[in-house]
Amino acid sequence: MSHTYDYDVVFIGAGHGAFDGAPALTAAGKKVAFIEEDRVGGTCPNWGCNAKIILEAPTKLLSEIRQSDGVIDGQAHINWPKAMQRKQQIIDGFAPAIQKGMEGAGIHFIFGHASFVDPHTLTVGDKQVTADKIVIATGQHSHRLDIPGKEFLHDSKDFLSIPEVPAKMVIIGAGFIGLEAAAIMQAAGSQVTVILRDQQALPAFDRSYSDQLVKALAQKGVLFIKNTQVERVEENGSSYSVSTTTGSFPANYILDATGRVPNTANLNLEQAGIDFDQKGIIVNDYLQTSQENVYATGDVLKKEQPKLTPTATFESQYVVSHILGEEKEAIHYPAIAQTVFTTPRLAQAGVSIDEAKAHPDQYDLVEQDVMADWYRLVDFEKAGQRTLIYNKNKQLVGVIELSDKAEDVVNAMLPAIEFGYTQKQLKRLVTIFPSIGYSALDNLG
Image 1 (cartoon, rainbow, N blue to C red):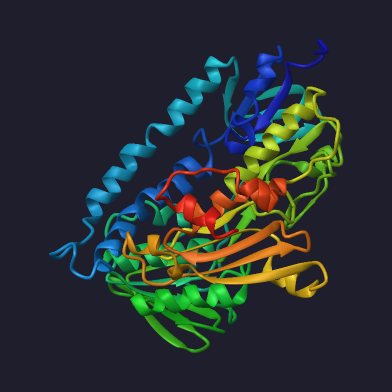
Image 2 (cartoon, rainbow, N blue to C red):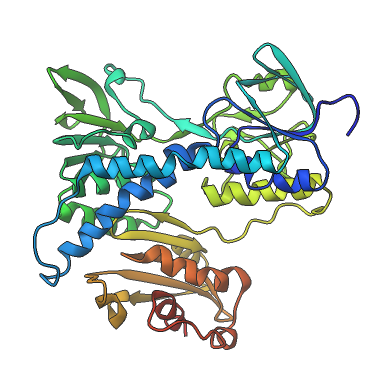
């Protein structure tokens, strides 16, 4: 480290885009600091995936009970205050554990808001911090509709701490957050309405599969209103009225799930000559910004890859390897699996159906009814569909599945997709029987 700088590497943000890679720097003798203005760990452990999946677990269990055709007898319901208490007890330990682990690795924490003075200098409150390398890992925040009555809207962070189940809930938006919240609240007893700006939910997934998921949620009782713009929200005593281009909808709670926005504001990026736009910070193939000593990782990036926690982890570890000189090649993203944590689940990885259909000379599609597999009856599944995508060498290159176990199936198939396993290699895998992993790989043969 040059004596000019306080640190070798400073991370702005202490989420997965930072803490998954940073300990390798201190292990190599580098002086490292995290600058964090909120809670250590960032969105995922505190107000995102971890909290969401803890609240979703009872809904999945409840769905299994209801699908059991009386094998599990009696009535079951979700005790929401207990579910919320359990969620909070679990996640409250994450931030201090992450901080303790990072400090144990020799990483210094600076709490406050970071702002660039130049490519090597940041201000945090009334002090300056300098570094040879800086990694921007500031993530995203919820987008908010700018409409009359916007003060009555809640974001996903609010929702994941909702103290009671509203009698009527309106969700604006039908992406990951919107549909997952709809599934949780419907199972917990709320009358849920989801308002879509256009015709398709989950644009990141194949239309036929996202339509099947919407149909499955509608059969459970979720109301979907498509091709609709929200115009305003009005307060009516203890409830609200959501006025749209296709009518008005009553609500006791309104979730604005209209997307997420990169946290680039108030970093003074222009002062440091760092390029960005409304989709995030612009980087090269080495995750360097327009200032080569400044990197960016995670959801704040402008990128085509899914903005997910494991993607941020992969990028964090890549950037650290690049800083240490261990990785000199451009970043090469693997197949990235993604899931909508509803019941049923929707999961995918690799080449998409649209891409395969656009290149029939390169790919073959195989449709499978997952209910043809006896193992699906064990946990009372009722329906499911899978599409496998092969290249002309009969190697699996993509999968999408709608089922109660879709995320586990896609995870089981992911090594085959990423590493190009042949049929002969797949037959070398002697997996646990019976299990969903066995069933998933057996269906590739």
